[in-house]
Image (tube, rainbow, N blue to C red; front, top):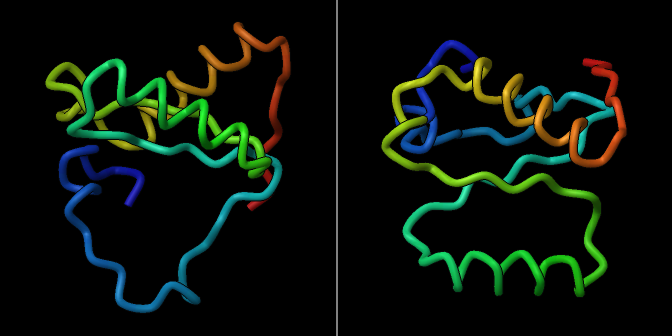
Length: 92
């Protein structure tokens, strides 16, 4: 799935969630689509206030829809590390 574009990944139907490999040591990345800027900020604020685990948010936009998921994860986590000063280690 890491080689698929974000657009394609957003349209994949996963039949068996138990077979999905999840990387340890990284925060979840939540891709949002179809929300206004204000709605996005309200969603992120509500998510944080609910006390859910650490999550990195990104938006599906025309500029990134054609990039591979792997490439986007590298970019997003790089930005996240620069903003937070936290380096994450992948344990798959």
